[in-house]
Length: 174
Image 1 (spheres, rainbow, N blue to C red):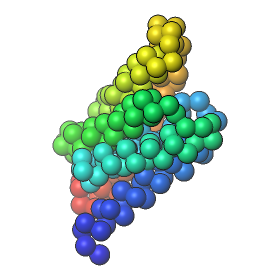
Image 2: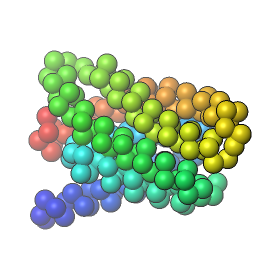
Image 3: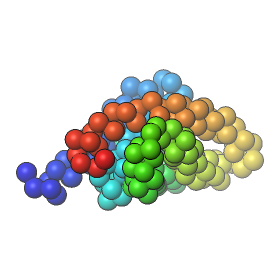
Image 4: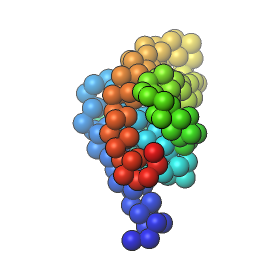
């Protein structure tokens, strides 16, 4: 298989994985592996894989989730936010490669989890509050849900990076 076909296949599989795992965790409010999967795709195969994995995976989830589709402006903010998590994965690649060689990259992964949560929730919460009004009560109501997601991501990123490390060794990244 050519490298291009492999990359397209990986993007499709990880996008589908975001959708399936979002279903699996849909009853755990704001606990979602999608952030880590998009970040991981960017880390493993670069920005050109991470961004579409995040965008396609979130488009699938926001369009076909069990609670109904999101309003278009909110959906666009969600898609852009998860695509940015894939971008962050690609940008963090050299940082994580250096920190893995020195030992455990936990501080860098915690920073990545924080940034992924922020780049997703800041535009989503602002868009949601702007569209659904009243702005300030709606925005303040969303902050606890973002905090739940932040705590979950702070646990998920360091916990699952070991699997990413194994894949990256097999792929020749590390």
